[in-house]
Structure formats: structure tokens, C-alpha cells
Image (cartoon, rainbow over the protein chains, first blue to last red):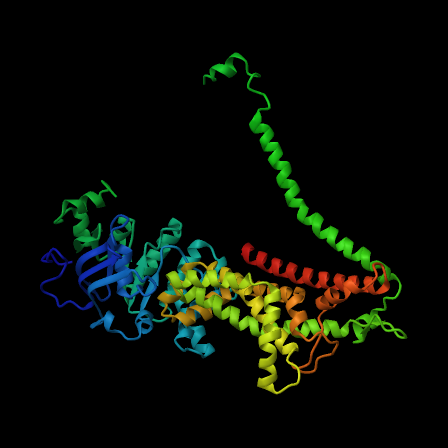
Length: 266
Length: 309
């Protein structure tokens, strides 16, 4: 990162390729605000880390990006989220929007289908029919998620029978199956052993070449290892946004950030 | 490491069978009796039916006649035959048609309640469905007799409206609420994480239901249908009233038929206790018992299969 970055991480001298532009985003459930007045940009091909204690609004933020609010009638969104140059609320076909954004949830969800069908589900729903095409997608995605070597001989067995760490990589393979431009990860390592966590982190580093990643994590050090820029959310507010190293070096605007990353609360 | 003052002075003084000890023993015995009473009752009922029917099974019973002949003529003067084929066919045809009615209805209702309805609509529907299940079967029979009968006569221009069609529809409507409740439980047992994962992949509501939720709930849904079939086999009053109660091998839905259960209900009061006819009716009872037992058992095993996964 160049030294003349502004505090919010926007470089002054290089043109920035913005993929997601969030402005004045507020989210409330009923009358309870989960997130208030968040304004930030996510750049193409970066890993954008979000750290913060529980109830900071991190998960709600992710849900707003791909409009996962449809199943939660009490969830209300204010402000705007522009993805790829277009406001997400203007999409008439919300399903088509979601196909361009992959999501990985905290707990691994191997659908009760075979390993193959887990990865092939989304392409099939989107209309891919040819066996050769599906074979190619399944193998490519499982390879990218570093799972292929472990499951290549048992693609027909139930995905829900894999170990937790394997299921989480299966979830990542599934999220990649529609070539999303944006991958959202919500505390992916919460139910995964440390070895698998490191393998997934390696996968994410490789994926950065091709897609943009938003990484919500409860592990401060994970954000430090992976993220190019990191935002610190606290009680529904974006307290800090800076290049990751700067955030961890103490050059911050808000004392609470340093308190949090050094483990003094949260 | 210091023990309490009481046990230190006399460790044995606290070792007495107190009230709690006796209550615990009493409850254990009570619960055990309650538990095994189900087993005792099942065995007892089956033994009773079998003993009542055993005289017939040992003497006049002819396997080929029983399952092969449609002629049920226990009171015929010159040629008494006990052919249960027409009765079996009657029960099977009515139950089969009932499932054609009940399966789409109950699955549709269960999917709507579990996956689409929200808040008050959902709660109201659940209560209504349970109320429907509580309607006495004689009321359903009454509807078959006084509403469906003229309706079928007019709509299809047939002489009699008490037939397979009538009884099948009535029985289908009767079985649907129970099947709906069980099917809805099966759908609700599918973890929300599955729905959320599919939603995040861009699946539509219907795709989520059809591609993810229904396959995941498959065993529970099969069990719901099996229990509906069991209900159909065992139902007596409504079928007696709506089926026409005449011995026939049905060739069309407009044929009147007679069901196994209805035969027992209608004839048992007219037979001399211990007579051949009386015993033959108990043999029909054995058959019914075995069929419903097998159906319910397989439903149970299938549901257990779900739980193990």
C-alpha cells in the first residue's frame, strides 16, 4: 500500500476499480437497528476484511449485499448498495443477482445430496444440462476449494456425511460453481479445525487473483493474514476502515479499534 | 477435604430409604407398567382375534377360496362360500382412490403451511387442519350419503352415487388432514440452513422446495402417505355409508363395493357367537390387523431411518 493513502484506505494517486459501493447503509429488524449509516467501497480483486465483536452488524451487512432479506420480513434496508455499477435494489430478478454473489455461512451446510450434486445444484438450477459441462464445473470448483483429491473417488456419497472441514470446503466449491464476481464469507472457520482453516486461507489467497472476497471474521489475526483492507464494526457502526497493516500498527482514528485488535475487549 | 458434620459423626445415619427413594421406585414401576401395557394390549388383541377366528381357520378355511373367490356368501343355504377377494378389492380400490385424492391435497397443504405461509395465516391453517382431522367419521359418511351421492348421480349420469368414487373421495378428505400434519412436521424438520444455502445460490422459492426441501424430507413424506393408507384400510363407518356396500369386483369407479371393515361391522351383530360365519368375520379381522400392522410398522421404520441420518 502506498504511504499516501487516506485514512479510509483510498489511494489518491491510483485509479480505483470499485466493485461494490455502499452508501448510507442502515439495516433494522423491526425497530432494532443492526447497522447504521455505513459508507464504504469494496475494490475489485481485494480481500476485504470485516472484524468486530458479536452484534456488530457484520452478518447483516453481508445479507444486504445479495439481498438475503427476502426471507426475513422484519428486515428493512436503507441507503444504497451498488454492485457492479448497479443498485442491487433495482434488480427485478433477485435470483439472478444472487447467482453472481457466492456465500459461505458460518456452519458448513452439506446439502443432503451427493458431493457431485451439491456442486452441480446451482448450475443445474440456472439451466446447465450437459453432463460434460457439469463434470467440468464440479471438478474445477472442487479443485479450487482444495477438496478434489479427497472426494474424487466418492463423488456419489452424501455431502452431509463429509467431515466438518470437508463440508466447509464443499460449501466453498458450491459457492464458486456459478463463477461469482463476489464471494462473501461469514466466519467460515467457526466450526473448522485449524489445519483446514489454514488450507481454506490458502485457497482464498489464490482466489483473490480472480474474484473479490468479503471476509467477515471473529479472528482478528485471520483478517491480518488475509485482508488487504479491514473494516472494524462495533455496535452497528463502521468505526474504522484502513489498509490492514495500518489498522494493526496503531495508526488509527479511533482508540476502540486498537483496543479491539489488541484484545482488550470483545 | 473435610466431610460434612453429620456424616463425619455417623456416616450410616444418612443411609436411610427416605420418601424420595420410595417415590422414585414407585414412579419407576408405574412408568414401566404404562410402557409395557402397549405391548400387552397389542399382543392381547391379536391373540383375541386369532382365537375367535381359529375354529374357522382350522376347518372351513380354504386359502384359495378366501383369496381367490369374489363370492362372500356366508348365509347361503345351499352353497356357503367365504371368498374375500371382492372385499379385499373393495377396500383396496377405495383406499387407492382415496390416496389419489389425499396425496396431492395434503402435500400441497403441507408445503404451503411449512414453506410459504407466515405468521397468523400459518397458525390459523394449522389449527383448522387439526380441526378437520377431528371430524367424526360418521359425519363424513353422512356427507357421502346425502351430498356426494346426488352430486355424483347428476354429474356423471349414473344410477347409483354410492360407489368407489364416492367412498374414495370421502376417505381421501378424511385422511388428508392427518397426512398434512405429519408431512408438515417432516418439512419443518429440514434444517433452515439448507433453505438458506439454496437461497444464497440463487434458487427460487419453488426450486428450494422442489430440489432441496422435498428430497431432504422424503422419508417423512413417505411415512405420511403410509399412515394415510393405514387409515384408509381401517376406516369403517364412512366407507360403509358411502361405498354402496354391495359385493362386487369393481371395474370402474362407479361400481358399488364393500369393504373388509364394513363387512365385519355390518354382519357381526347378526351372527351366532362361535358360529362358522362369526369365526370367518374374525379371520377378516386378522387380515386387517396384519395389513395395518405391516403398514404402520414400515412407516415407523422409515421415519426412524430419517432420525438415524
